Image (cartoon, rainbow, N blue to C red; front, side, top):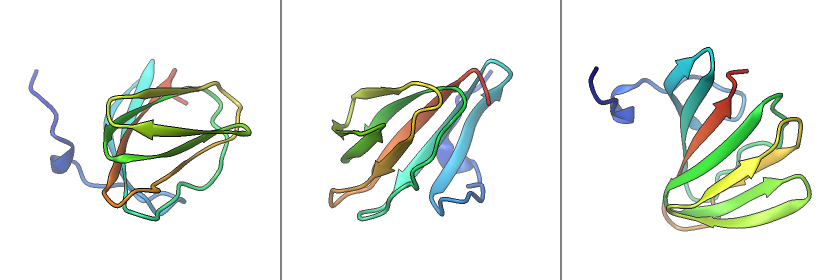
Length: 105
């Protein structure tokens, strides 16, 4: 076992145009690090599994259903499966978020 450094993982192409790196992917869970630059928004979408967002750096807004949450470094935000959600960087620094999906979609 060795530590995983997201900087060593190549970003994957995604329909959202966001720098996204899959840091963990097993049958029971998936973790993706998303790096949103100032003003960048993850397109509203639905995921068929529960999602937990963990803010690693910066601050921004997390939309869950019709509720908008101001999220800051160190905070978790839960998004139940099949509910529309989105991330927006409303700050002046990068908004780095771990997207934890369980189980893996």
